[in-house]
Image (cartoon, rainbow, N blue to C red; front, side, top):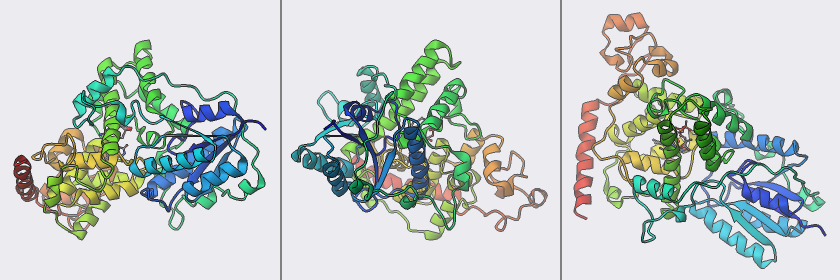
Length: 488
Ligand SMILES: Cc1cc2nc3c(=O)[nH]c(=O)nc-3n(C[C@H](O)[C@H](O)[C@H](O)COP(=O)(O)OP(=O)(O)OC[C@H]3O[C@@H](n4cnc5c(N)ncnc54)[C@H](O)[C@@H]3O)c2cc1C
């Protein structure tokens, strides 16, 4: 009998720099398996992520076919499916790339114990991070709570390992009929929206898959990386990498990004300076830090990291929450962000901060409602980054924004979208306003509104909350929480 292996694809939908896949392929003919698990304890994927996953699996299947192999799809509980497949197909090595949310860690440990007990070898690897959460700690071995020392310690650990290329030769194992009977087609996964098909904007904006991720990285390094340090805050420019959904689904890994960035700078292929590169890599560092926080705080998406926020006087206001979700708050930069999100499944980081701050602070709505909306609508919805970022904005998180930081959507708009290009792109109904009024249409007089074809309250909403009132209300509530925190 030849040695047979199985690689279980999860959030590592790529062939290059995938050590678990390489180990399986080196072992012998491989079953390349993806299992869509929708009923388990893991948080179900949001709509936009499901769309991405669908396209990403198609791209992975295409890449495997180019190597004479095939992706096998199944649906259900991996805890039950995997042991059955392994036994039926007489697999002797199972490999996977590790995940770091508590439900996955528990599932993996259980599965590993079951498979090993049945005589199968199991090997897991790191494909998602530069450093796994437990590899960066304080001198006394405690989890880190602040980004700067975290990143300093991570950097001191040395250069990440060089990425490995995709295996040259791969062979799919011939499926026994009993395994074929367990498979489903791509269409059976029902990941794409149908009635209605709302994914037109996503299709226009993105090409999921490993090849597209590599191309996007190359374009970023030879272009926007130059000036990234300043440009990354400008939603009116294409100045960031837009790699987030590719990273989320593991179509590219941080080791690949790290080394490609370094070598583009060193070879002079990128015109950017090393400070732009350092800034970019430190954002990859924030992703690492978020995973560190998630690993040590498994309920990061549902519980305040700082428990003092448990008594915070959140308001329930369904009408305001809906207006925020639909981009109808009357504050153009907030509305533009929410509409960009709805149409493309992505929002610029600066605008994510402004929009989140507006919901949490000006509207006093619990950050978990915002986190949930992002989870459903972002193509990069990430269990670590989303939860950590929302808690950061709320002030309830580790190394969070100071409680008194309340982004003013008008001054933020004027500073980071000075000509209103971003706002005009997403809110065409106010595009006719001058640059001076584009971030505060309610200040336009009757003549200016008329000339721009705007009827406030009809074609574009009036502000749903007064900024000064909202700010004072938030500061009062936050100051109380801070005072209580101080009594610790
Ligand atoms: C309220 C809020 C929610 C967010 N939710 C998510 C989310 O669900 N998924 C997600 O990937 N990012 C999230 N972010 C972080 C950030 O906005 C996105 O990672 C970034 O906008 C993605 O665009 P990019 O790939 O062009 O980033 P770039 O600027 O090119 O950065 C490169 C990579 O670094 C990582 N990164 C950048 N900024 C951050 C950050 N602040 N925290 C953690 N990692 C970061 C991302 O993986 C990103 O792809 C959130 C931020 C906020 C304020």
